[in-house]
Image 1 (cartoon, rainbow, N blue to C red):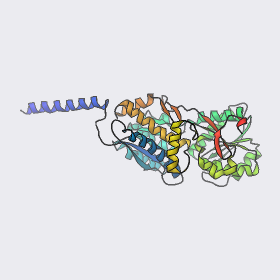
Image 2 (cartoon, rainbow, N blue to C red):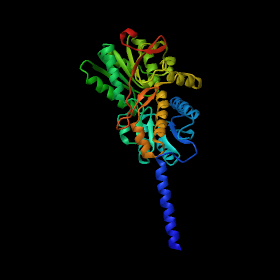
Image 3 (cartoon, rainbow, N blue to C red):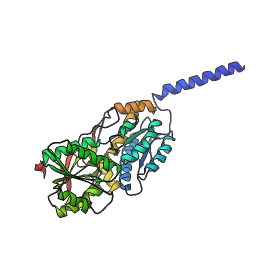
Image 4 (cartoon, rainbow, N blue to C red):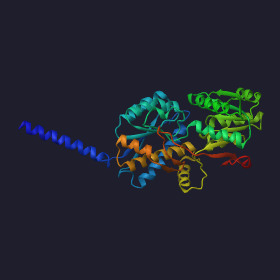
Length: 382
């Protein structure tokens, strides 16, 4: 009798396992919400970024839920405040991977913080998509680590084209914030200039993040004869830098990165930011209907237009949910493979991840003109 019961028990277990395997690649059998973690700074100096990314992600989730969710289930965001701290992010990553209901994470903010958390996600096969991490080594941490923003080197190629072909300038200065990201990005910008025989790097300065006084760096750049200055930092750097620089040199040309493209730049910088040029993957004043809908929903909640980084957060959630839909299940390995193979048409253009998880991006050149961001097509646009 015991032998018969043992055989029956083994048979039931085998059938259950086989049934679970077969169903996991078809349709998820759960009925609760599908959860996605959002891990950004919600307090501290960078809280405004984290809150904007969370809002953008929620707008995309609301759109999906209004249309029945995915796999017949609603989607829910689980919000974490990492304070833009590596220590905090490491702890949060452990919490996220220990929750089997969470299928992926949107985050983190800075490259350094993202790279602290990424190995935990990789080890536990939890997809991480960062909409902001631009450090060259971030996505190579593992096959479950993705970025839906530009690699900084590709962005600098557009800046090189602006300086060389659009502006016909030669003497270049760099001002970078003194963080891991700023130092790395500043070094990449310097290499770009040094490798172009038509350009000359006349000065390279690092400044403390959040400082209000850039007079020493400006004096060194001006003394070196800089004609154009690349600002390696957010709008909180480029706005006061432009104000102080133009007070001593009204003709200086300032160029920013896509992460400084935000309405707050114009609000903080006023007339001083007129003529600043950016390469961006998202343009809030685009005529595309999907962009208009997102911008309208975002402005209603946040009170200002979304940045390119917020738009990338919106698309990051969209591409992850589209991967779930196409995969037909929440199986970690097949979901990762599906995410790596699909092409997604979003408000930041067409997104497809390459073999190491980097998104290819196309850029639009923008310039601040008459207090607005407008398309830049060379000197004629000024």
